[in-house]
Length: 66
Image (tube, rainbow, N blue to C red; front, side, top):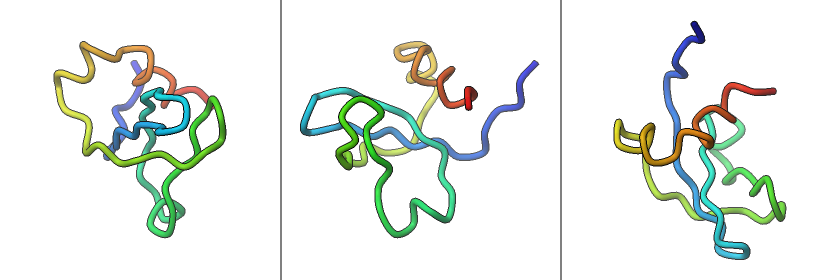
């Protein structure tokens, strides 16, 4: 079983409209992570909650992949 990341944040890309989830680390303190689709910085939507695991399972699973 995979360990659950400590902190996940939801982001929405304003350029392409996609939603993505990233783990918080020191790199994100200075700037938001780039969208995996178009490489533009996204807008923060907040932390991931239990409902997001059901609504966006693919995005949550992608956080575990390198």
